[in-house]
Image (cartoon, rainbow, N blue to C red):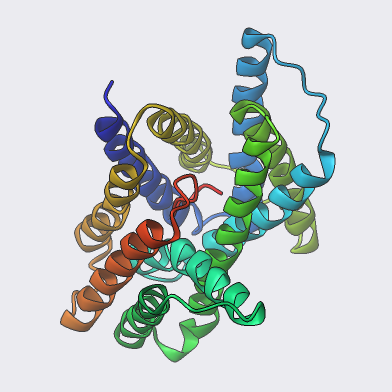
Length: 292
C-alpha cells in the first residue's frame, strides 16, 4: 500500500480510537482506558517481536523510560480531555505537538544567543492563536481543566517525539519502542485506576470499546510507521492532519458538537502552523501523532 493511503488510513483509525475512548469514558476512568489500551498493544507488539526474532533487551533503557514517561503522560491527559471536550477539540489540542516542537526550537535558539527564525516564530504564534480560537467558543468554564489537559498532552507528545527520534538514531526497532511505551502505559494506567477507586464493572459494550481502542491504536501506529519508512515526510505530515477532519465529522454526527466559525478558523490555524513548523524545522520524524 502506498504511503499516502497508509497515512490517511492511520489518521482515520486514530480518530476512530478517539471516538471509542470518548464513548468508553462514560463507563471507565482515563487510567483504566490507558491500561487496557496499552495491554492490547503490549500483546500485539510482543507477538511481532517474537515473530521477527527481535530481543526485548535494550542498550538504552534510560531513553525508553523518558519516552514512555512523556508519551504515557500525554495519552493519560488526552484521554482525560476526550471524556468531556468535543471530539475535534480534544483531537486538535493533542495535534499541537508540532507547534510545541517549533516552540522548543525557538526557545533553544533564544537561550543560545542564536538568530531566531522569524518564520518559525510566526508559526508558533499562529498555532497558539489557533488554540485560543478553538478553546474560547467550545469550552465552558467547567471544562477549562480538560482543555488545559488537552493542551499539555500536546506538549508532552512533542517531548515524546523528540525521545522517539533519539531512540531511532540509537538503532532501536519500532516494535521495541512501542512495546516499552505500552508497558509503561499498563503500569501508569493501573496506578491511576487504583488511585481513583479501583476497576470499574465491565459490560459487553465496555469490553468491546476497550478492545477496539487497543487494536485501532496499534494498527494505526504500525501503518504510520510504515508510511514514514517508505513515503515523503512532509506529505505524510500534511495528510496526518486528516485526523482532525475525521474527528470533527464524528463529533458533529454522533455528539451534536457545536460548529462555529471561530472554532473552524482555529483548527485551520493550528493545521497551517503545524505544517509550516514541520517544514521549517526540517525534522521529518517528528510528526503530530496522537499515539506518542
